[in-house]
Image 1 (spheres, helix red, strand yellow):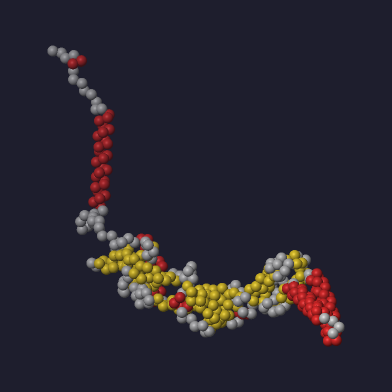
Image 2 (cartoon, helix red, strand yellow; image 1 turned 90 degrees about the horizontal axis):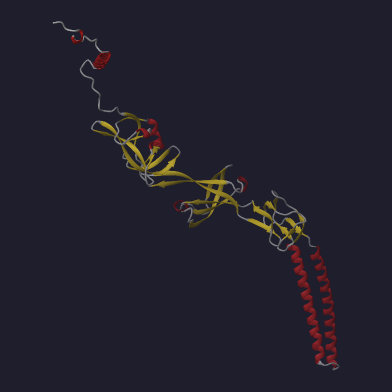
Length: 393
C-alpha cells in the first residue's frame, strides 16, 4: 500500500528559541565556574580563607594621671584708676559770661580763676549800698548829738524826759539803718565773688560747656575739673583674699605703662550682691605713673583645696549638667579598652584645665582624637611625654 505524502511523518528543523536558551544556560555555567575558580584562588595554602572577628585596636596618645592634693593659682584682679575728686563747676546765680580763662586739657592750680560773669549791675548796687551806709552814718551822728543836747537840757530842767527818750530812739534807729546798709553791701559783694568760678583743687579741665557771651543758668556745669594729684584704684576681690590685705601696706599693681606702687587705704568689707566681691581701695603713690581711667591689675596667689590634676583641653568633651567627660585606657583581660569618666573643671588656663572626678593615680588618660572613640572600644595606648610635662607644670 502506498503512503501518500500527506500522511508521511514530519521531519522539522530545531527551533531557534530552543537554541538561544541552551546557549544562555551554557554562559551561566561558565560564569559560575569562573567565580568558583576565583574563590579557590583566594584560599590560603593552609586551608579555607578565614575572616577575623576581632577588630584592630585604635592607637591613641595617653598621659599618666598624677593627682594633686590642692591647687595654687596666680590670679589677676582688674580695677580702674580714678581721681579722688571730680567736680562739676558752675555759677550759683545766672548771668552772662564775660570771660573764660581755661580750656579742656589745661592744668590749673587751686584757687585759679576759671570764668567770670558780667558784674556791672552788681557793682552799681554796691556803690548805692555804700552811699546808703554813709547816709545812715550821718543820720546816726546827728541823732547822737541830739541825745547829748537833750540830756543837757534835761539836767537844767528845760525839757521833759520824753524828749530825751525820743532822741535816743532816733539814734538807735539810725544805727540799725547803718547795719542794714552794711549787710546789703556785703551781700552784693558775696554775689560778685560767686560770679567767679575758681578751682577748688589742683587738677585738669576735662570739659568746657560754654563760651564768652553765653547765658549760664544757676548751677549749670561750665567746667569739669578732675583732680590729678591724688589718684586711687578700686579693685573687687573675693572675700577670702580681701581679708588677707593689710591697710597701710604697700602693694604693686600692673598697668599699661608698667608697675604702679600703691598703698591700701581701706577694704569695704561689704560683698557686692552682683559681683560677689569686696571692694579694696588703693592710693596711688606716684600719680604721674598712671593716667585716670587706666586699667590696673593686682596679682595674688590663691590656694584651692581641691584634689585633681591638669589635663589638656583636647582630652575633654562636654557632658551634661555642667560636667565634662574624658576617656581612660583600662587594661581588661589582656586588652586595652576606652572607658569614659565624668569630671568637673575647677580652673582653666589656655590649653589646659584642672579637673576633679572619676580619675585615679596612674590612670592612662586619652588626650586626643575623642571623636573616633566609643565606650569599650579596643585601643592601643601610647604615652605622650609632652602631655605628662604639661600636667606637671
